[in-house]
Image (cartoon, rainbow, N blue to C red; front, side, top):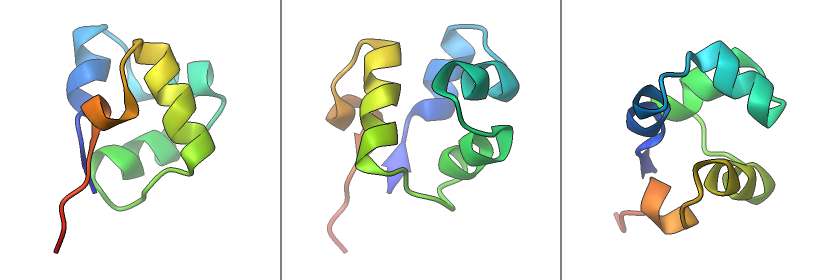
Length: 65
């Protein structure tokens, strides 16, 4: 699933570590999501959307294959 996490994180001037701490996950989790190697749970997707004050679908882009 494509996402805008890296773009949004950089706009806020945050490192992966800082965002991970805010979301209570590991830096590796943030890296994996940004590199589209891992799809977050619905709970984590909601935490990310709340943190950025955006709708989930504005951050995560589902593409039918």
